[in-house]
Length: 253
Length: 296
Image 1: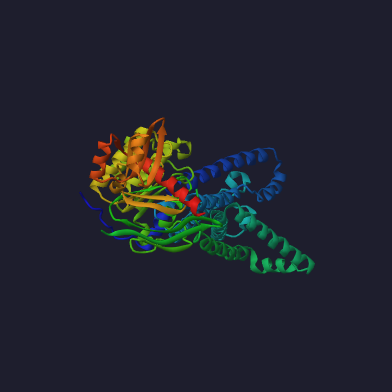
Image 2 (image 1 turned 120 degrees about the horizontal axis):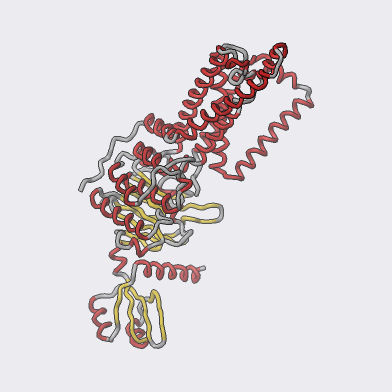
């Protein structure tokens, strides 16, 4: 008969890291599928660029290139990561609590996984964008990873834009899922109604006071990159709010 | 004896519903407890409170001497396997068994592998596509192989067949003998686990109606069978837990009997038979309902 040995308790950092690892225990949903879909979308786009360009006069090619910079082909991946965050909080949370994880460690570990995934995807997309530039749009003048939304700066700028955009979608997803875990459907209804009021109210206020130029001035003043940097404020608000909401949430069957 | 859990005046309300009503009890180290009761009696809520998954309305809970709520030091020694455990999207059992050891210091991989073979669990299939019983087997394996000093099983075997349930009982008892720990098992299948339990806590409508050593409880009632006349004469003014009658025959469940009383009963031509834990609990649960009706 051996009595169960009491192991040294895990340090706070160990506890947070193992939650982050839990999110990556099955890399299928978080890593494999997204890159596979990027590959498929890229292949489809590549085929389309080829079809277009092989049917154009050389004189029309510049025009076509102008149009291709508005490609939204890489947008879905950000929305997908929001879904990953929603699932991570809504389904993995009750599971992890059964493993004896505290809500605090769960949230911080999840946040660590989100930051790590953001860095990984931002780096990967940046590498692809550099190749896209170096090969003149994959030899066809195509644009997917250097679309206009990511600016016209050098690759470090794009790396930053990708990174903050991923953070934004991860943490907004986490905050919305926290509302769901804590207050279920009623909570989400209230949340979206309030959000709708704020947005419409804000729009009304700006319109009736003829102040839309202030918004324009704000973005003009912040600049392209600066506007993305300001998203970090929203991301931080979502992250902190999500933490405090989940801190009092109860897993239910 | 060391107390692992100490609960005093614990109440949990959801709106106007009182799920756990002013409950106090102690759980001692290295024993197997049965937390029994009907559906909706408050078993799951109580376990959620004990594992810090839910927040008490009032009263105090101490697990390993501290409040379990958001307490990593306490919770790392706790494993809680639920009836309707959901697993992360796209998880296969192999992902569960890969990640569980990160969280449970006493995890025994050999034991887990043996259990996987015992339950014939396919480890490389998506959990979403598995049968109810197979999903339950995953939880049972995690609960056993984690060897957490305090393990909760909340109806862990939904959908498991009789053979698989027996494997669970056998392995639990065997591993518990080699590695003593505190196990709290909540279940409806009282007779199946009766031999496993060392202590029984019965909860009904949020209140604890029995908190007793299992052996003492088993000895606390006897069925007296014979002709109605003889039975009635013997029972006299004793507390009757239950009464069945067919024609001139009667079977009456009464409280524990002394040796002399047993001899008297036999002399009166009555038969005495033990009452199963399940019967006993059904009788006592009914009784409490009657009392409720009277007091209401």
